Structures are given as structure tokens and as C-alpha cells.
Image 1 (cartoon, rainbow over the protein chains, first blue to last red):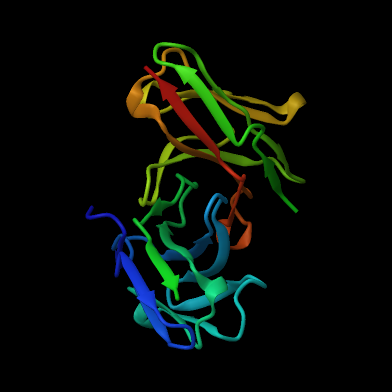
Image 2: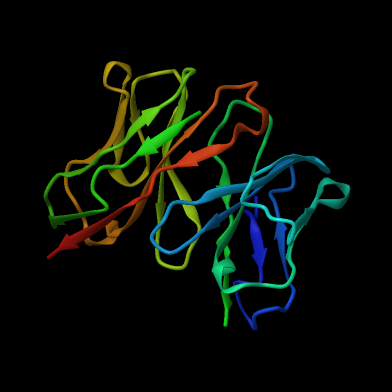
Length: 114
Length: 116
């Protein structure tokens, strides 16, 4: 069990640029989640995949955000035309279908839009 | 809809003192409840979870929490604080099996400070 890996750990980008983050879940976990955490707040749900299917999307996920999970393995989260309000920690988590044991979270990608 | 309220955004205790972090939840169905800890610039680590078994749940690092349905509470305690406990703590609620996605709803967090 190598845990949930996220890449990059930090990203600084200029407003208007596109960014893409990657998440590699625990290999036997078929569920994958993206959360966003702004400074001083708890994480907020963005989207959820079961295998390769994106089954839920939060209203926080505007049209500039897109997430994929091809082949039900790793996932990517892309933000187009970044805005300063997108600055946050983006957390990925995975879990199995079994009795909820709590997710396993990655270390997150901290995005700073300047 | 589910929600979590953590009373006290900041809690300060002396090393060796009792730690009590408060969490109240709202859920229309029997909840699953979790406590996570977050150290600076890191992800969330699961401390403990309640999944409708024993109401007193023991977790890692000496923490425990008690589920009280009548009070809709799931407060986190530790008998004796250690300097390494200084971190941000989040309470979260999830739906039962069958809730699509098993989404977690988090409270706003409590920053625990431990004084020497």
C-alpha cells in the first residue's frame, strides 16, 4: 500500500493559465474523490468517480473545471483560465466499496494563482 | 442534508492537559462520523471513525471519541496533550452504505495549540 499520490505538490501559475493535477489512488480502491480546501476552512467536495465513471459533481465545479479518470486508475483535475479565487489546496482521496473506513487522502496540491 | 459544526476554531491547552475538541453533526440518516488530523501543508490523516458499532471509539495517538446520538455529538478527547498534537483537526460526517459516493461533509476545523 503506497498510499494516495498527488502531483505536483505545489503549483504557482499566472491568472488565465490552465493547470492540471494528477492523483494516483491506492490500487485496489475503486472510488476516487477530489476536494478543495481554502485557507482556514474544511475540505469541500468537488467530484467523485467510481471506477472510470464520474458519478457526482459539486456546484463548486464550474465549467472551467474538468476531471477525468481514464481506465479507472489515476485521475486528473484540470482548471482552465485560472482565477485568483482558485488558489487553494486540492486534495484527492480514495476508498473501496466496503464498509466506509474513512478515505485515504493524498498530501494535496497547493495551487497559487498570481 | 448533512452538516458538521465544530465549536471553537482555536483551542489552546498546556502540555499534559486534557484535550477536548467538540463536534456536533446533523444528519437525516444514521451517520458515519470521522475525525481527521492535518499537519501544515499536508493531507488529512484518519484519527478514528464511528460506523455504528461501539459508541466509544479509540483511535491513533491516544485519541478517542464518543458518539452520543441524543446530543448529536462526536467530541474528540485525549487525556494528556503532547506537543506533537498541535495541528488542525476536522470532524466529518458521511452517509451510510448505499449513499451514492459516500461523500464526506467536513466541519470548519479546530486548530489545537499545545503550550509547553
